Length: 470
Image 1 (cartoon, rainbow, N blue to C red):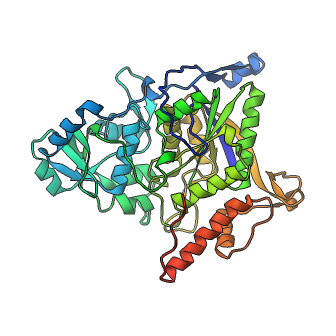
Image 2: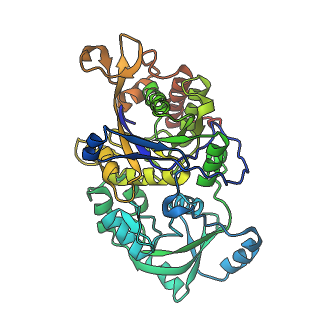
């Protein structure tokens, strides 16, 4: 996660998640209307930079959340039906996409993409709806099958989707099967076909040569039984939580790394800015990515424990912070993928989105350089089709200020006073059980990170590490 961040305002308000949840069954009916309109530059000058602010929950894409669960009284019937139709076994990543689709994160999608949706996503990063409106959709949400599976499906218009234990997860109906052009998909999603892209290696290279789209009917809510399901709040549950907290603005911060005090500075400063703008109760959605991540990322269970310590140590205020898990797999597709991350948070109710340097980026898999320009993510978000409700508030660079002994915004007039601690440096310190400068990360959070890398050493020495408590 980067040291420089930009705040994107998604216009139409909040919904959040808990600071270490208890699931609430509140029915979501509260309907605020919050929007922020920034006038174009010329008009701004004519109107003395007038900013119009009103309050409310941002509408989901397409106007409503599209959840894909079977009604309770139809579950037994659907399970019987699933035994009579062709079956497709889902990979772990496929199951994560079923999770994403079922809860409405990708609203208004009603299932895995058909060919027209796939092509629009690849070529336009957006979908045109029946009413002519445009919603953002920058990463393909597709299900691959191979030749033998296609042959088994035959003329059937429905297939059953089962997990690794052959348990029925969903039925995909009104299906459409079309060619999986892997090279085109990879080139347009990542901007390169270089070998070594983690998601490509995991989910595309060895996948089938066909894609199957259709409408999903999900029989049961996706659970992982890993001690973290209580954090996996759906968009509906997040909206209920934000309403319960009387939030009049929700700002989301996605991360796949441990939280250090530079991140906390950005988040607390964001809240201050929103209060200065006239909001009464802005709520932070701290929203770590919980789907597939590459092997050298800190695992989700350890990240969640570290985030909990950040709240326990008072770095972030539990009263104004909701911690939840975003179930999407990670592509590491830079400016293309960050649009998906922002769009999904609109559906969860966040109307502000903080994005850092090189969001969703990674090092080039072959060359010794970053794969994407560090500033392109924030620039693309400000121009992306279907994300017009996002506005930009740029932040300054955060670094460790030696004179204050804490993370602070970088002052270019005294660069000698600042230390930039990269993610690589942070990991090296933790692996070596060395402490970072005081004020870089809360002690409890740093101990979790050290314990994680210590468990890696134990594992490499042939002993099974203790399970992380969650």
